[in-house]
Length: 389
Image (cartoon, rainbow, N blue to C red; front, side, top):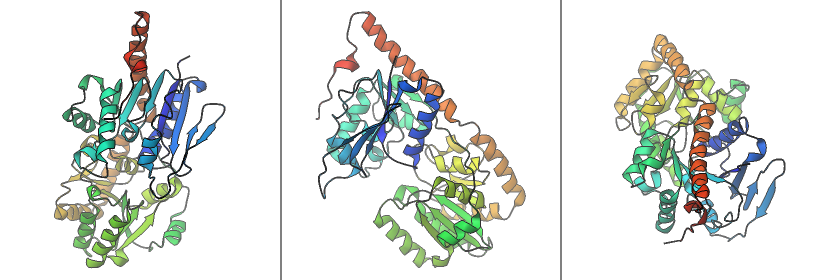
């Protein structure tokens, strides 16, 4: 029986985490449960967690005080799985592409560190790139990411575009409960943004657009859900909000549970996503699946995701974002149209379809392996060693 190892960082409820959890659940619905194994590099507990049904194992890893971060933790333990038995090793995010494992498939969510030179060490960047080049197959989660990979010299014949799915969220928590917990004022028109505050997310321009609409959209109030990403990003957001006089018009919730997120989507009059660069863009799709009207950037992968079911704006143009907010909030018929089209668009992205297409990639790589074996030759991916540059 073929065994598939799904390997990732333990990212919890962010985009990477949702992908790993949803893909795992969908795959075990169509394969014997013993054939799909999840392996998580958990920086928080400094361990590698293997969830091979029906048992789980935890390997504690050495800690380097004051120096480790989640990326270096994975890098230090890149050889930890070299002896792991498995027909295929599917690394669920490009962040771990440097791992030394045979028969490697990598899901690439984006090329942000390479395109934007953001938060990546040169040595680790080179190892990640080598890992992508040496993979037997790469799953790109959008055509935009597929093109980025090709622009960086990755062989297009081994890149498979497979969209993520979206699961409609159930809003079981009352809005009043959330308003009280997160100190969100009642009686407002809620503008919702979900994501970090790093520069590519364009949150400063979003704040500028909210300030520009003033009272023309009634009692609009921005709810910002999610961690900042770094203290300096939050400092910049707060500084901008103060300078624009928005202190009473913005609520920062920090991390929320999936149940709380569902209620925030349901509460929102409009969802805003003016990002400059995305590999996919799950939050606007989640908003659509919740029936919330969406205003989205027209950059990178987002046109693929939202289709014609959102108001599209130039993310560099604050004025166009402000006008779009006023237009949506001022028209019930437009809100209804966007809600209906959004639900239809979200219905095109399912985790079952994602798992089905991923299983086909597994089959194609396994077929290649078996052809080499039947010819009496070892499969290259099973014997080569990844060496640091």
